[in-house]
Length: 130
Image (cartoon, rainbow, N blue to C red):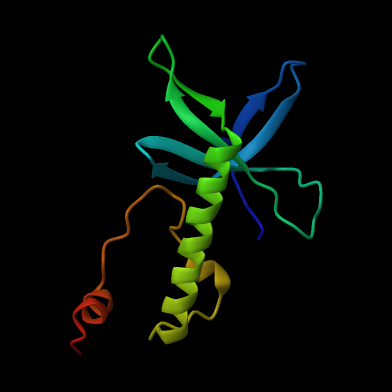
């Protein structure tokens, strides 16, 4: 998946050696009353496989949001949640009346943190009415 960003779209993280790394925000999610972000690095180590990093979003003593490394158990739960969502999407897509010509159209709005309002077609799918 290609990520095209303007300069203002990048999140820059600085490591302990003052090395800067640029990331795009792929998605935010909530689980067990905690908020998490999934960040995709600008430079991928393996071009055939998209790399992503998961961080827990917390508030520090100055009331500023900070990123915290997640524990292995948290990461496993997040991976299970994402896999379950993908399975649900695969099942929905197999029976869906939607037909996306371009994969990017299917992902439009996904991970933006914005809720996409339902359309009339969505309401018909929920109620089974046509």
